[in-house]
Image (cartoon, rainbow, N blue to C red; front, side, top):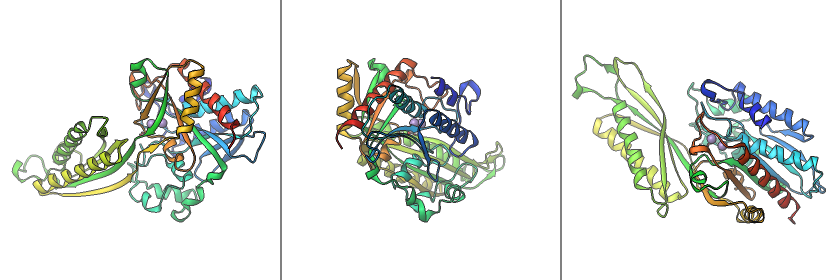
Length: 409
Ligand code: GLV
Ligand code: MN
Ligand code: MN
């Protein structure tokens, strides 16, 4: 808790909110603190070109593939202090405890901090783990731009990572045995069922795109209603449609879909002008790829119909469309068995939120452990998890690490 709180003070703002956007000075500071903590813990530290951090504790067989555990330290704007850091500090504490108690290990352990898990700055999520998984193509960066107009591709170039050498950050799958991630649930299920542990089966994937309506900015006093090309009213219609269509896809069997318009730019954005241009950032997610793709298609079609009716232009910029990711069944069996042995009541569940585990699952067996979020609140300063639950989650993570590190390859 001391380390978690130390990280949580970096980027703290009003009402206890935490803001550490990727590549900001605060996010960088949080990674420096982590490196310091890892060094104190006696880990061998490696930082790759983009800033992913790996802190290693060797096992009896230093050549054996390593078991990785971690998460991320960057946050949304005005988030909380648990989303991400619980998994990084939880893994660090697990490795420290293993070392202090001289618990024998066959495989090496690595505590990992992935950079840029949150999509809040560039609309691009799980940046560091996607690069490690070799999952980023140059074209994926085309529409990743922050609110100030800074391009993600330019930030990467400034770090010496050109579009042509993105693949160099990919890690050899043979160097890894598995990846484990402890995370807060960020939803209400565990609390509602009075369970302290969630074992994750799969991760819902997002389709993300921007819709730009281009109408015409006009004087708000002189332009008759029937002569306007109002881009904001068009946006309002589409936002309402996103909610309506996702509510139709609310049953689990057919594939539940959630959709959010979480950001919008309005131009010129003044009280006395008809809005001439709006840019909506749309996030559609589901654990069913066909359901998600269908909703994304319907939203784009509706946008086109709205633009046609109003005689304005529309442009759709795709950011990234991903498929839902199943997690490793064998790791789930290990965590399940440990819960049974320790009489911990658990829930087997999918994850609605995205995580670095969804990228790591593409190159190594990946598993996730959830702990409850009070009232299910996350991406909000009110995010809170009971320290006892954090301890239980970290304990389960540690025992899973010991078991997996010592089982035959
Ligand atoms: C990560 O927090 C996400 O947006 O799912
Ligand atoms: Mn998050
Ligand atoms: Mn997270």
